[in-house]
Length: 391
Picture (cartoon, rainbow, N blue to C red):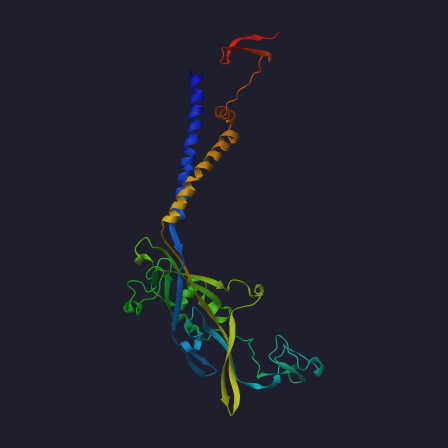
């Protein structure tokens, strides 16, 4: 009796795989599509605008010259764009005017006028060579803004360490055109009274749109004192709008993240192709009817405000499409089940015999069979009379 029951158990296992595997795959598909990928919702990205405003005052005393720096002095450009630079250190070259002067020692050394090709300029030079070798400096004379800039000595500590206490205000507005939803980072509860007192903190004040520059640098993984001198960095402030619009729109709120986009203070200077981030700008003025300028080489922190957005909302079309895709898994499940049972399992020969039945077609002993018919009546109907084998 046990021998008769064993095939039944094996047959039940085959039936179980055939019936349950499609259901399991279908369940996994539904969980993946509807829960993880949210295939029942349409998606849209936002059209956004960003305004920024820096606040804070810096003070320097260079060679006995005192100066106060406000926003118009240390932010470039000052219009409140989504990308700007905050100056933390600088090298100043004062009272430059157009004329002829020697290059810096070590830049274009010479021993005679023949070493200085007149009318040409070098990539690392400050102007056009006149063809004269200045004996006092043993460098080529150039037509340039004189005296030429000497940027080999960088102020240490940084001249504008007070920039660590500057504050940044970010105002961001977004619109999801597909769903007709408009939001601002000044969400419910963020009013004038709150803004005047709050300072962004990822834990205690995550929605406050006012950020301390030192905190931005720290949250990006940098040390302010290190980068303020010369290394400088580019920092991305990411405003992330990930919203489920099936819920109340009030729950659509921004999240702020900070990432260092350029600059690694831990990397040795010798390993860097170009150390730090800097640029130059000049303040022009007239003195005794002569045009002059003060040249600044600026080291600073570049801030890029990056808006990321993704909104989801229920839509019947993607829902039906996702369900149809899940139903199609049934066909794949049958193929997978057959491959596993017929080719991978140890008992594959048994399952193959259970799935397929083989029949043998036997040939007749003799093919010489003769049928005899006889006409009956006037109608011509045929009647089978007898069958005889031809010996």
